[in-house]
Length: 185
Image (cartoon, rainbow, N blue to C red; front, side, top):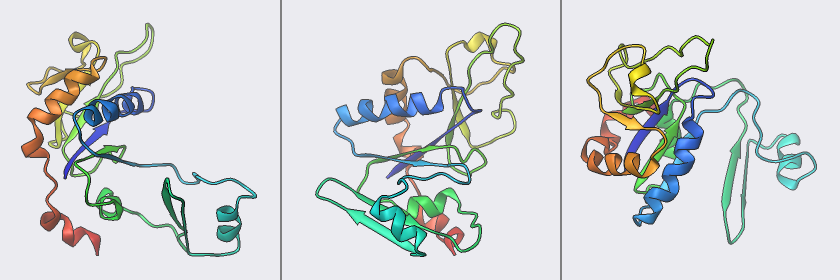
């Protein structure tokens, strides 16, 4: 499976780009999964629902399934610092691509998503000068990037072009399970 991350500050367009890339890759017959970093107290079920009630009663894991989907919720007894590699290990291995949103400090190849500031706003800092895992920058205004780069510049507003670039770069985005196996213990 191919894995690529999308890093950038909140509000820069990561979610929108990932959301647009999913159908672009699916149109090419590819199966796509997403791994996303969330903040501390996110929830996917709601008060009163059976799964919520089971978790509130103290279940360590609740898996719920229908003929349409499966969801697994796991409660940690104490805060756990899961790496992106832990999440990748939880995903179905039969996917072609995993798009990772967040995990900006990970050792995965990633595309930095950068948006030019609004008038009067300070520019977002960039990661690409110091982060060797940034392999491209997606932006709508490359001339306004705060620092020059030799990295490929992708049009943030052209998801089909970003998808084509990903497919052309697929060999270097193959996930190496053996390399990351030691990080899961």
